[in-house]
Length: 212
Image (cartoon, rainbow, N blue to C red; front, top):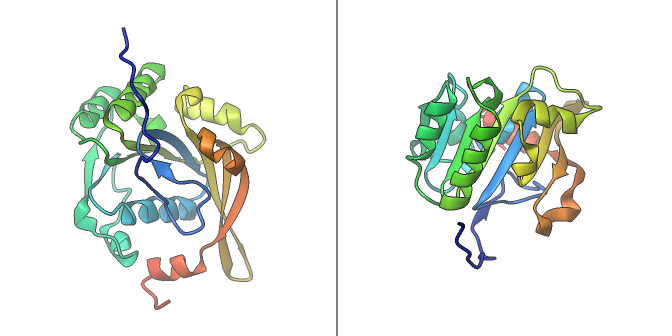
């Protein structure tokens, strides 16, 4: 039988980058799809650089560059990386993460054995520990005409997530923008559902190690 409690309204959160339309708050579970490598690099490294403390990444291979985090004025020493190749390893890793932390799981659909049960356990751990949990995937193919079906294919139980986001980059005459589609958001951010676009020229210069 579950215990009942009063939820807090003043939970901590973070914004991945300036102009991002929603804040990622403690106790939220997000599914994020990047449809190109540039949007993946921008989102992951901006999120980790802005964490302001310890952040945890569960990945397969090298997905995070300490050098890029440092170029965005973050502290790479505060980003701890672990590797998980099966759902059992993933859940074991979650059990070691302290409450209130940022957790990023990279390329979630590639982890062996994930499915509804794994997503439900991640949801449980996110609620119990007040984690800011982001399941991320850089999709080689993504059907823009059926994004809801794509989230079900990649993340198995999209109804358990607080945020569903699609990221892509575009450029025109040498200027870049990060384009964001929000399919689902927490109740307080319901007006953010839809399409957004953020200029990222300055951020890209920092990622390349160039002066602002």
